[in-house]
Image (cartoon, rainbow, N blue to C red; front, side, top):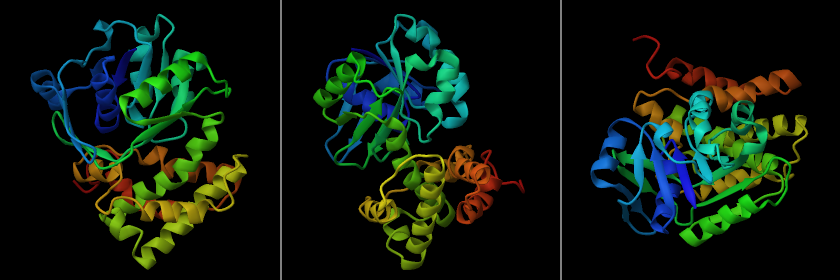
Length: 309
């Protein structure tokens, strides 16, 4: 398959790297020092299931020079969604599909408004990874995987073909009938992990094993689940207990990606994480005071630099 990775950071670089290792024609779209390092020495994956260097893949900051793709993995930060969607339009000119692996729950709708809803599948990434240095991605997960699906729940040929390519490349992949439920199931936890590892500046091994912080996490999971329920999204009754146990199983040194953006002085995805929980809660009459507290604490860093500088 021909695959383009729009936003080949930690997430896109990991999955795209594995697909390239398996012999697929992969192009990485990224920028800055990360791009220059990949062009000079290839993309390096370092982690629990073995290291690899991918030298065969094309890397560029200009997607207009690439041939059309069968699949575009869309992995940019949520605040770059619209600009990136317009940039990849030529890559889908031959009927290819875009799969968003972004953090939030509204990415595919925002992309679809630009490219057409029939060109976009929602997706979820399950891997803990970061750019350790330009050209080097360190992943902490022992069994990374993805889930994705068509908006209408159909089991299409393009979806099953890509699923099979992923599995053959060495990571799990599942086509799900209701991607919206799957996304919110993860989102209820992701928003809390992003907020708490960023506010406390502590990893999962501290946050979910300290009884006071874990109690706060449980209450925040409940807020997100209540918002989902008010939207008509049917999550399991035990979602809060499941989330706390799942987070306790995270690698002890794991931080959310927003924490890494915070410590590096970069813009945060906060508005599309806790910010979205708060906005939906207000629209639907669901209180979200703990997400509001976390949002307020992180708001001074929203645009990448402290408000007092």
